Each structure stands twice: as C-alpha cells, then as structure tokens.
Image 1 (cartoon, one colour):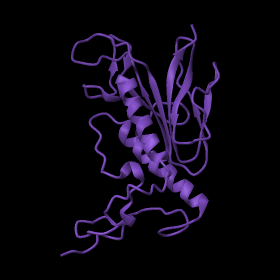
Image 2 (cartoon, rainbow, N blue to C red; image 1 turned 180 degrees about the vertical axis):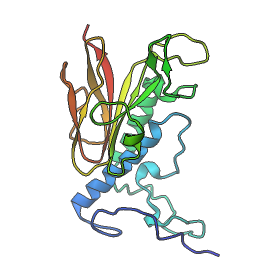
Image 3 (tube, rainbow, N blue to C red; image 1 turned 90 degrees about the vertical axis):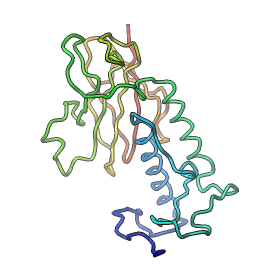
Length: 229
C-alpha cells in the first residue's frame, strides 16, 4: 500500500541523523560502507550488490523504495558523495578475489581438521589468536574476530593439497583499536597487509617476525602469509 519500510532498522548514524556536513561523521559512515562491502566481497560464493552500492547510493535510508520514482531511487551519475573512493575500493576488492582463488573456492569450507593433511581449511580466531569456541561465539561483548584461510587445503573432493596463498582476515567492529595475536606457524613467516578499510594502514606493511598487530577501530584488514625462508 505504498508505505515506507519499518523505521526499526537498528542502524547507527554516528551522532547525526540523515544528511550532514560533519566531516568526522561522514568519514565513519564511509568506513562502515567499506566494511560492509569487504564483508560481502571477501565471502565465499557469488556476491550480490545492488546498483549504486559502489557509489554510496543510500536511498536516504528508505528500506522499501518500490513506490519511489524520484531522487531517492534514481542513480546520480554526475555526483559521487565519496568522490570515487568507494568505487575504487570495490575495484580493489574484485581484483583481490581474482588474485586469491581461496576467496572463491568451489568447495564448501567446513573448518574440520584434516588429519591426512594436518590442517583445517579455515579457522576462526579470537583476538588472542586462540581458536574460537562456544564461549567466544556467545560472548555478547565480543566485537572482533579473525578468519584464517589455509591455502594448502584441498579445493575439491579430490584429497590433494592445493598451493594457494594463505590469508588472514581481521574484522574489528569495536570503536577502539584491538590487539590481535597473529597465528603461529611451524615455519618462519610474516604477514603482509594486502587490503584494509582503514586508509591509514599502508599496503605491504608488517615487519618480519611481528607476533601481533593493532586492528584499527571499525575496520576489515586482509593479510597474506609470506615465507621468510
């Protein structure tokens, strides 16, 4: 009956409702857009985006726009509220999916330990570098998690090891930085940053031998495991 959707979105606008000129609020909102896009495009399976997502098309917060034939739903190709930054970030994410096959495996990940290979295809980690258990998953105060994707895990039903890159995805939804303990390895390795929603972090950062990293507030970061041998 041409009604707008529910107003109970559970959203956070960071201090100001609707449009704003507050640079700090706009920066946080843009970071959160990047975080959501990263969560989507770093996931397994086929990602689905709506037209305009890459240009910060928010529809003014209206979640039921089928009855709106106006500037709420029209795509403005002349003006981009992020000056192309969000589009560039989406491009970087799609390039990352092509660069690392482990982000689009054709086999369901299960996290089960493969005794023959001596590894798991994925491991969920808490900030202490410990594998997540039921207590961690049910901790209502937890806002950070790490995902270790093992590049050697088999890619199909054939039981043979792969030779893809191993990635660590660190997600910190907390409003402050969180120290993450990096996964241990039997071989000398270091973790190289390949993408982050925090522009202050520089790609390729992370000195060899580092055992911890500071995950910036409200951020998603992707690290590649590099051998020191």
